[in-house]
Amino acid sequence: MALNVVSPVYQEFIDYLAQVATPEQILSFKVSEAMQQRADELLDRNNEGELTPEEQAELQQMLQFDRMVSILKARAFKQA
View 1 (tube, rainbow, N blue to C red):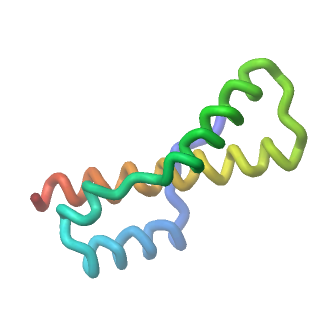
View 2: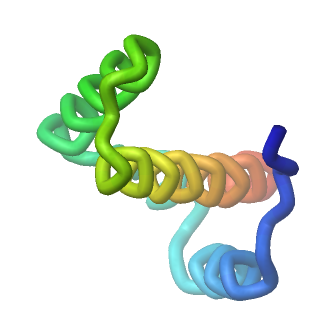
């Protein structure tokens, strides 16, 4: 099982975004409909055990991004 640890480089990026964007801008961020559909597709195919290694890597990157955005939004919510 993977740990939910944020690497220092992600932490630095989160800190930067939290300083340059308003809490409202951060809270209103959403990925495009196309990206959401792709994530849903990869999650469904992952549940069925049908992902290629490249798709597994893509899904992992999406999950890391989602975690980073969640942390950023949590910080923004505290400031809003």
